[in-house]
Length: 370
Image 1 (cartoon, rainbow, N blue to C red):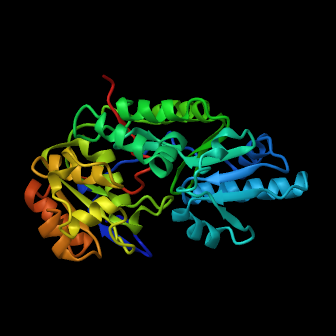
Image 2: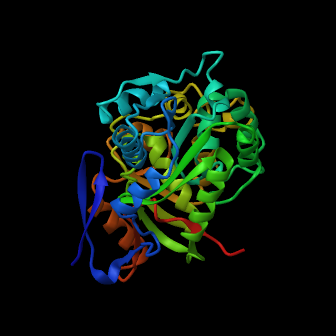
């Protein structure tokens, strides 16, 4: 009987499952760059004394690239790079990159987007499929973080209320148009829980388009409709920390389930709900259907997806958040441990059923051929 280890925040949970009941979703195309090749790519990125690095997420891969850029600049060019970050990410990044003083890229400052006009600025983002925009990276991160009006426009430009990972629709087009004429550069990183697959440097749109092409090449084509699915944590982005970041993993994969199929999220959520939209709904300050007419607030797409999908699928979770919110408010089925979830799935689908497992949501890039 094989043992599978699934991350649960600060620890792991062990899943014991017979071979005949296991269907592990992996991606053999997701190779990891060696340190030598990664260092060569870093050396090829032009940097100077006035270069400013602006990380737009706190993923392990983004921190790794920043550290390599700082070391490369100091070693070969005797340059000390400036680093700035949003208030939301600054504390986390300061703890991880302790040798650097990280400035504040202020959201409410009238000059907050001046860096986008400067060629010596390099934004750094992890590129990924995204349930709302289709693809995530520097253009969507900038829109979410610094342009509330444009984000509201993108939210209400959607064609329906369902997740569309790996598809470019009106929301993505608005993010792309917003970043189109920016002078700043970007590094887009493709990575999984074990390392970096690729990175792309260039103009913001150019680098993100290259990353999207790479993601599409890494996609798993025509996944069969599944009766059950267990989704682990994206360790690279620490998605287990909040409910919002965990739900992104759910929405990116849920379309491979059959109607009435069961999906189980493994997520500690030690940092709580993680977005204002989810929090306001949990505390009764928003109704689930309020997304239809309301001005967009952070995380409102999760409320929308829950509203649209809770009757179509059996959504379950293993989390440290209070059961009252998860079950009574959000409508999730609750499991106290992973083996209870497995037994429930086998009771529903039969003892010979094969449960699909995603240990690393980074690699489960599902795409149809149509």
